[in-house]
Image (tube, rainbow, N blue to C red; front, side, top):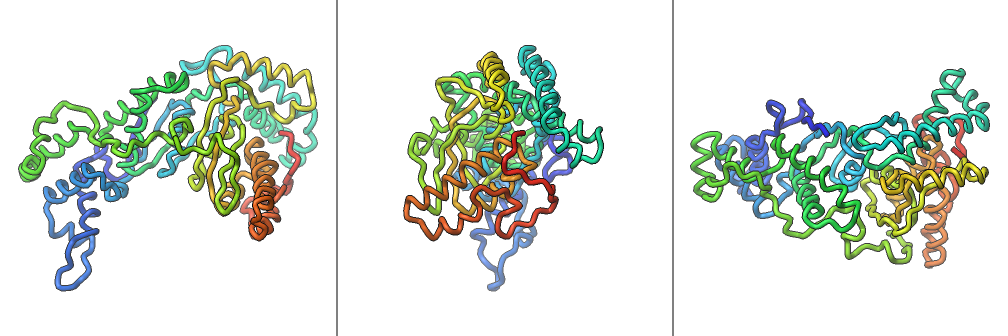
Length: 444
């Protein structure tokens, strides 16, 4: 795994995060909350910068972090450029909401042997890539040639869809690339949640995660994005004025040199949000609940769940069933021989946590967020087929019926026009890039 900080980001100096400048900013943001007005004039952030020394601002910044008053340190963002990061680690990060990310799609990524992927997975990926290309060409060539204008583009489109389905055979530890921008303190919080898994793994998946979590944390420490005891000592020693102020307010910091333990303490005992078994309040083992807010459970592949993680208006968590089962691509359902061969093959890689492994998922969300911020992205002919079907054929119809059964008749009527429709048929939706071939009955 390789980590660089986006060079044009704020607070990046010589490739590392500048905690001195970041803590000054924290001190300004904190003072906005309580700084008294002068001559009855509102106090602006610039007034605070002009009237207070670096030493005062940095000391205040440290105080807010040590006292768990962390909103002032959410304004300073960090953009991590991660290469060779396991997909499952991206899923963990993407499930924590307070971020933005651009991630290379594994739907259209060639698979080659590497330290994360076994030769067996690569062989099965290539086997099914060829099968899907032949199957799609045989059954849907006229469709692809019509909408892709020429033979070369049609073959390219078919290859991409074949890749999307063949990758179900490949481990969720497959390496990818992501740019992940997150508030500074939020990243420190996430690292403290990761430490819970390192210290007390609950199952085999968490055991497998430990070396990757450790590597990620170590890279973040190297880039100075983790607030460690040593980093506070270094900030204090930038100049004599700051040193005097910090050592007087926090004498313990003088002894922190060379100690790379994180300063942020997980005082609220929070865990990573992806794993339902770490949430005693989870609804994953309860019945679905319908109202203006929804708790909905289903089974879907790890690849499908990764699509949902990108929607920060819903809360997702998962459980891995005791018995392994794999997602079967829809195009194989009508061919029993191919379907059975697929099931045999995906069972061969079950110990690698293939992206096609079915997991139980709970998502909690409002009706508005489901329709406006998830379905209007995923209930689309251009989206991954599995998640399109999850919302178009399962979740939205089930929510509609569940509301009727729960005496939410008025709300159910509002939802009715969305049932069994793709987003281009949703009330009020205007597609910026119409495909001209919406298919409610897609097979691929």
